[in-house]
Length: 278
Length: 305
Image (tube, rainbow over all chains, first blue to last red; front, side, top):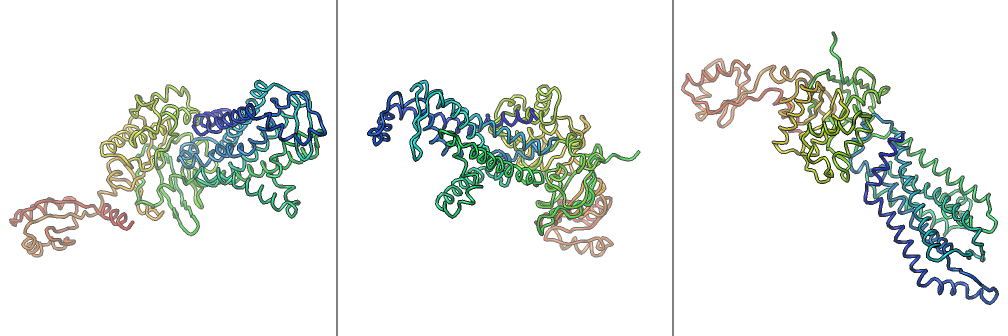
């Protein structure tokens, strides 16, 4: 199995498109850092100006944690696309390039090969999010230094600098889980087609489509939303409540794990029997 | 001692909806054969080969490889087979060597780097080993395809239309390579083609299929040289020749006539006799062309495509 995983990792990291995602994370984080460096103080002042009559703000509010929080908010829009770009290509890319015929005629188990493929794809998304975390936290702290974090979510919550690292770690950890759901969806779609574009666009379209429908019809769809994986993709924000609601966190984790199991289950069931015609 | 069957297709069918791609097909490839798998485009050759390589599951029938049921001994049997199915596709963004290394690792090849060098040398790609496959010509990819077939020292290789897209020189090279692999390395070969001439030059046994069904199977010599030949005699003075023939027993063997030729159904030994007959009657023969009954049949098959 380690042999198969290392081969799949080698293939992923030999492809140019793999570095589009990593490069994009670097560019976006750098752009946000630069933007905040130039305009951050002004922006924050604008946001909290109505509160200045009631509260007095002291210390370094435009700090590394604030930057990381902003990056998290911004990048969860882009990361699903970057993850789909690789996960959607895992099987469809082999079909498209005709290499199924090379690989699946070797004495290897299709199930083991699928597992190796998914683990390799998952490793990529882990590296992507790790890079995101390291860049935003590392560069943010390096450029802006530490400080308290102000979070505006309906109300205002202030976290002390010493109360933040574990929250960010869990937020990024949950991000890995959420993106695993996205990856398993793209992987599933990838098993059904011979063209990489379909699963990439399909996965992103499904996520945006379901999110939009459930937001627009929130009152009607509330019972369904409770079980939709898209509802919980931004659940990393749960870790930025003063008292973390662990029941909500566990529910979010269970829903995501349930969908991952379902998507992968269908993929494995279908692909093990699939006639390779490409 | 019974001949060992390397491939035994036993009443195999593959159905897609209402289409029977392969229909109750049976044939067997013996150890040491260069076995021709012949049929017009769309006859079911690639589907059959994909079933042998377990890329496609048969709808009915059984496939035995090395006398073992493929359905229950997939890994054991596939480790003894190398295959080049349709186009030779590779990871184009990787070098020839890296492609072979990956495939070798999947087949648990021992002394991999040495073996990769060996097969690259065998197919004449040593100098391009480090080049990315996307820079390769069709002929080079075809040779690399054969190299990956041989990588794990298989007992049987399956080549699906290996001459496709090659220029005449490339076709000769591939043909010679296949003969060499069979004779010098003792590897059994199944080669598919839609061109009879290609199979005739290389195979010792063959099967012809059409619309997924077996038309005929047997030794190439027997199939191609048995029965009557359709022989065309090209003649300037066709009316005189026709009169001469009509006044002789040869008229019974006359098959058809053309503007400048007469076609006879003849045994091989009768060709020289008829030629002598024409010369004795002062009729000049410009050319004699043989069309064997099987070839004639196969051309009819392919022309209906």
